[in-house]
Length: 425
Image (cartoon, rainbow, N blue to C red; front, side, top):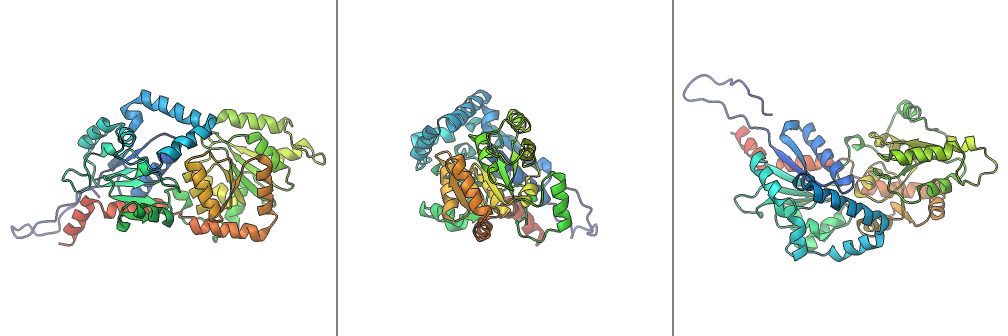
């Protein structure tokens, strides 16, 4: 896009080549509170590159980490501790701040983190558009309509709306569902500024659904690649990118009480969890009451993985997904058309995500291991229930979200509008 071209016009004073439009520069701002915001940023960046934007024209910024590493480190620890050890407190804070306006004392303070750093980045990079996958908008300088305003987009990464996402500097909102769009409209946001795109996920999910026309030979190759049996139902169990699902061993033991069921356990980057689970099941120390089967049989029914970059391939093989209800993982499961079992969602956006999907028929919430086992059995032993849940997931799934967002950003980017007018001259 930014390559120089040779003019085909004759060398006369009456004709000259149109100027070559430069590559638009995009700034994507995220935060490291969980993996979702970064994954969404990367998915958008990859989609922009697929549209021909050079990687050098796309800059990803972990704003708080770059502006104040110490505050970032401390706040991440506080977030993780409250989220995992004091979930009720986390939910109380989330619910109390959910209606918070941008110009409230707390809202203004939260948005101001990283303000000076981002202003320096904006001055140095001169981006044509800024995209946020985490709400830190006050640093984005000027309000909409001012001469110094840089076009700004917000990619909301949950199925629930926290008012922190609503800010006067935002030009366009990208949301997961029509219901979120209606909620934003009720808050005074013009409908034409809200795009129901879905939450951006990895490119591998594009066009992927559980019932799509996938060659049996390719599917067989995937079973072999991951050493999974094709003759038994597969439950894909996501412990979380940081391995944060509670009672994970008890959950596995409960699921293994169901005969002819295979677990594919994803431990993410938690190497300690992966090692502990491998030791537990290879040593035969689990609490699975299975007197008619040997410990070796249990070992063959649980397959333990570390971080898997090609998670879409495992979702293609799975019959249902067990996970915590983070927006990105839920979006991946919906894109694959999987029934979803949600285990002990933390109050706050997790619980609200879970309730939304359960109300839509795409998910079931379980509060203890045995309840989860019964929910899995209800799906896997009743084909009609399984099909209905798959259909509900497919109805909510939006596997092409990243591409839709990337295209819309470029279409509304001033430099692209300028290039379009040049090419039409």
